[in-house]
Length: 108
Image 1 (cartoon, one colour):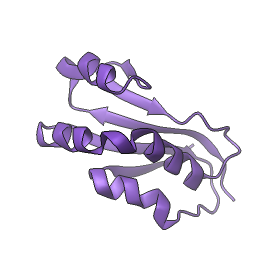
Image 2: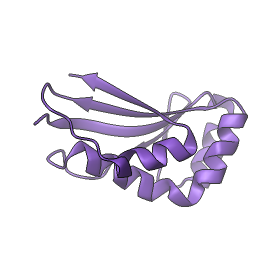
Image 3: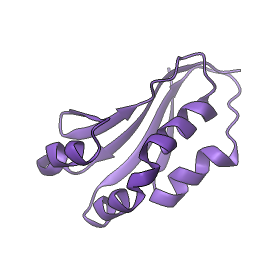
């Protein structure tokens, strides 16, 4: 089983509005114009759980996120993982699908 180093949901393409987006999504932070929500789960948690946690934190903001996409933002769930088997279930993809986010797996 692969281990997870870092899972973060990134809202890119809104550098001039990043602080405003952060105010709408107070659990996020801004880094170089990108709004980021990092999973607070321990690295030992399965990747599926990290993605579901992020979806749970943002689920009430789905319409707002979709509005940002229509304004040119891109939504990316970036997962830094080690080599090994990754198991993702439908519940991990549901939120990503609903907001139109890309899933990016980066091998470290």
